[in-house]
Length: 385
Image (tube, rainbow, N blue to C red; front, side, top):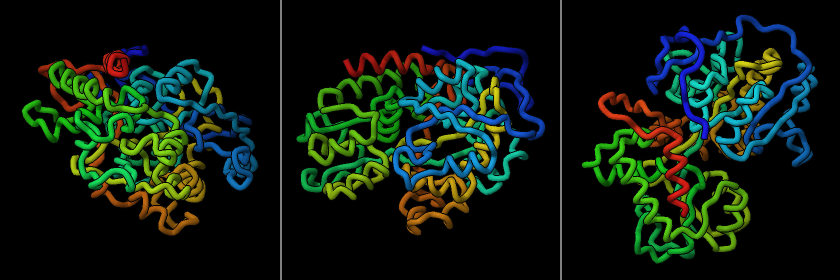
């Protein structure tokens, strides 16, 4: 398992030690934009880099290639761990990293700070996504925000009664839906249990679900081991969760808004709620490799994919809130931004975005050591059994 370690020389221009207390390698950001190198190698989530192959009507890559002369070569990654591994090879220029990967890439020296003055799209990104703990260190931006979403609680209306309002529904050891509860298949899901405990077991002192000391971590892991007895299946492929809810194999569990929408479009009797405790969530960021062989095309791609029209296209196709506020004027569905709460900061104030757990607690505590991502990964294996 990849671990976070300081590498390279002194601190970067932003002040060095970031939220994890580790020293960020000194890597210069691109000073000026030159001519494109003719190609760009990308690591992305499925649905982020569409060239008409999946659906002839869904293509924002071809216009970019014609406009810039940069040929797009895309590698779809299934997990954040795979993204980190691929970026460490130095073969890729940009990546659409989620918060459970971004800090690993930053502290590992695999991505460079971005020069936001070279990215005209940056000025129109919602302020709620700029300079956050998962995409910046010491006030220095390490990427261009792409979009965001909450991990909501989805349920079948014809089966789950009464309708759930709390995550207690998936953590109830005596649940009548045992065997048909689902959960996200990733170590970062430990944060969902920690969030629930943060709200229901205040004596544990959890202030941030990604900053867990030994006692807090043990409590979250114990809760998930108990939940495992009621889990029918864990999911990572969102299309498979759609099918599971349509078939009734899953009736209750963590989900994304896109899954809810797709299932409803297929006439499945499902609905979703942001529970009273709030939820974890994700904010993806386009980041550029510190070893990029095509940095100019990399910058051109990042600027393009977060431009209003392209950002609107991706947001609608994937099912997420766009990061560019002007994208809301470009969506085919004029209610898209309302559906995904794009400009509703009060909604996202209830969301704890995925953040890489570090040994130096990301909640600011210095008197204890927190469990890092390697420990979360090891625990996840034991949780699933």
